[in-house]
Length: 579
Image (cartoon, rainbow, N blue to C red):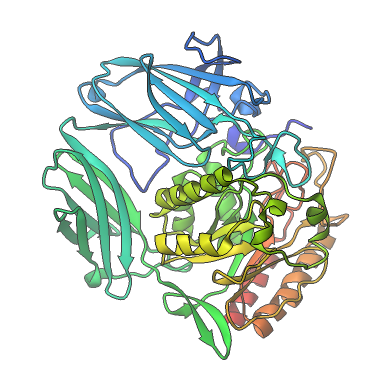
């Protein structure tokens, strides 16, 4: 393994990392980032003795940027401690303490008293703090057993290699405080658009005493509509006087302000309709009543110096803008979740997101893993032990996290489809999970079983093809998706993470790589769009990750391998074939 880093980590440690507010969909002006250096120790016991070391939050202890760079074992207890000194404007108010992600179990103590316990490494949580004074202590005791297959883990592994990456433990997304009035505040908001009637409904929850709560919606700084909340917490906003549907070409975003007395929260919303329609015996994807072809990049969201955590929010912006310049109109966020600001940046750039749920379950048969990419045999969900979902607890954890993820991400309108299971990893009861998600979210589309082991449910007939030209047929029942393909490899000298290389198809130079990409898109993919009404393409992948060197850009984001103009032209051709 070599030490490489992106340009986005320069100066980290001299300032607060990722200090900007990480959630544009629920944001208060009175905000305090708690990222930065915390006291830190790793031991084998639950103790609040003050740690003697330190760590740079929010980077996991496995990463170079954390300053720790150790592998967390199953019996390790990570102890984080920070003395918080509040600005004067926060004194005398209530506080909300937010943790956007801690992997895997977290015990939170305020002034030595346990105040919260959270399980699950991919969902945010918060707690209300009252009467803590000018300063107070936060202690977090965290455990992470990456080998406990009951929990979601994504691509984390204690034996990384190939398509599996180094593990992430403890705090790995932003920590922050917001100040709220003592008598009452806005607890949450959920936005649901009524596209045909050009209305937005905001369901809000309030804590404490409500004080004439209201909602305003603006477009480009101009007030469009205002509404009071009903007794059951619903505000109805009529946007027909200034209705602007969202699209890749016109990423029109509304700004929302919700007030409750002295408390004020800002958010955002975009109007778009998503549906599938039968045209000439084939299913097509429509957004806002127009046919849309989704050309996507597989986005793993890893960085060499910081793992699952971006070194800065400029790193998010760089990846999104690269995809946009290459003509892609969407990203498939693969087997992980990001901080809310990522989805807002996608929304601003006109990039749709296909969001994966994070897999768990035990590793399934090596025979399946080694043979299924070459032989398209099928398995039923009844064989779930083979696919790694062996016990009821593991299934219940997945059901719980599916609902938690939806609730946390409901307002992110850049997300237009969900992927429930990927290549059978931990797959079980795909029909039941699809029905459960459909009830929660009737608006978005669902790729129930991406790649392998289709159970005939969901909105997509979804294929992964790497080792041969993609030849698939529209079944006339669902949308056709080539949800992973490509994986073309060029290893950039001096920009590699490991001497070991995982590759689907290797090229000796960039010229040959780009010619192969052009042929793939202009011949094979174009034929599928034109002849089979392919609706959803995912090319593997946006960036190199550890041993996987099949990105359009190197892992350190310093070498763009793809000819951006050529790639853009290829994508424009695909869009023209779908119109």
